[in-house]
Amino acid sequence: MFGHDCLTDGFVIRTLTGYMPEHDCLPPDVTATELVTHLGRMSGLPATAARERAADSLRHVGLYEERYRQIGTYSTGMKQRVKLAQALVGDPRLLLLDEPTNGLDPAGRTAMLELIARIGSEFGISILVASHLLGEIEQICDQLVAIDAGRLLRSDSVRSMTQASSVLVVEVDEGLELLQAELASRGLTPLPYQRGLLVQLASDATYDAVRDAVADLGLPLSRMEQRRHRIEELFRADPAAQVGQTTGAASVS
Amino acid sequence: MSADASAATGRLAPSAPESGGVIHNIGYRRYDAARLGRAAIVRALIWHSFRAAFGIGRGAKAKVFPILLFVLMCLPAAVNAIGLALNPGSSPAVTYDSYTPQLRVVAMLIFVALEAPNMVSYDLRNHTLPLYFSRPISRLDYPVAKLVAFLLACLVMIEIPLVLLYLGIVTQVHGASQVWQQTLQLGPGLLYGAAWAVLLASIGLLLASTTGKRVFAICAIGIPLFFSYILANVLAHIGEQAFGPAGFGQPSALTSLAGLISPFTLLGGVLRWLEKPPAAGGLPVREVMQTTVGNYGPVYGAVFLILTVAAIVGLIVRYRKVGVA
Image 1 (cartoon, each protein chain N blue to C red):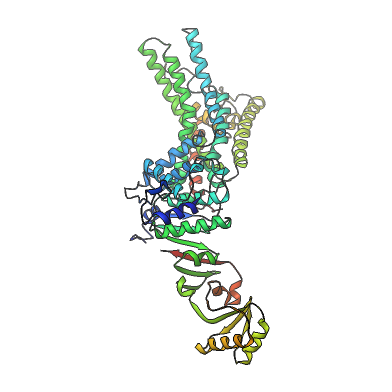
Image 2 (spheres, chains in turn cyan, green):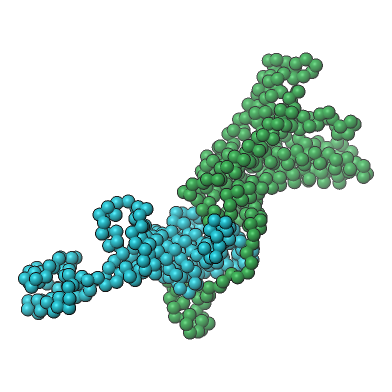
């Protein structure tokens, strides 16, 4: 790890790692500046550097004047940011984030995800995110390791997991049952799915068949596309996988 | 806020970072300078914890009691100095060894019961420990740093009043020989105070580290310390009343051993043991804590050592394995 031996050089490795725990870990009666400065010193920064970097990292996460207030007065979203700032203060090479968007409202969630993506791309810090919110991982991560109840499901790049599948989604504004019958009579096996139909994509002829069926019936076609895989399907494939804790670990490089 | 910041970044980062007066994008700055080693990190943790013992760096409420107690501890020294200044030639009312035993016991009991939880229970309650142990701090460094910090805090509480007392007396005596004699007396007083600090700090931290709840921790320290002190005194009195002094002016075994129960009387016993026999013509025999040791002086010394070492080892073992939440 970073060219150090994990077994013998734990000290060095820990100075180069930032950890953002999932649980609440902030004392209420200190200011964010004081806490982050102190933890910066604990990461091995000299006093002046710790102060500067604490101010910097709090600004990065979007805490400005609030950082002189006691943490007990913060909202959940601000606490989440302080947790990220304290992980960032020691200038780590690797960030470990455990459920970074816990307890955030949708706006805060988006902001946090944007920030994490930015830390990965602009700051050049490798990030390991542990999260059960697979949609978020799809949004920000490059690599994904899916672990379910201690069992490795799949380890691959997010792009390959969400590539186009051989299933066609067809949606019409009305006459869904008519279309289903028509498609069945043309030798396809349409399955109802949400507001549309799923059709197995055998060859390009399938597109023609669907087009003809819609045209013959005169239905308003609103959507026809190749369905993309979603990460959730990893866990859905095996019914046993539904049980137990589901954790996806993913990294932004 | 961070959405604004990152939006600003997206706009400004590629072209002109300084234009338009938007200063949100400060850019990420690397830290390339040397990092501190383990010793320096532990020193920083000691200093931080030491400040915390007096509520510095925490809210105003945290400062009230430590400062109040410190002033209380200094009061006898001040009164003594004023007394000496008003009646030149009179002998000091307060000695270095005992200081004012009752006041010191009560003040230190409250100080340890209130501040030891601030040192360790605080991190347990707020689940801050994972933040420390994910950094270059080992499971040995943390309890040792906390112990040293609290030891220093107890030393400040105990020794600074003694030094003030010394200064108050020295400014009133005449001649180098008298100053020298005062200095000779101050030495053992400081040592005795240091023994107090070591014992109280280690016991206090061990008890406080058992729970994250502040109130429980205060009780876990205060109740045993307070009641053992009461019990030790009661047993000593019973020993005197029921059995009377043993032969050759020796107190009964019960009276002699009662002092072992409480850390406060234990230290008084150690002092009694060590000052026997009194240095020839040197230090006057002083009335110290009510502890009577009889022939059992060495037992007091042994119990003091064992108790201190056990508390320190216990504290270190306690932090070998700590739950996260």
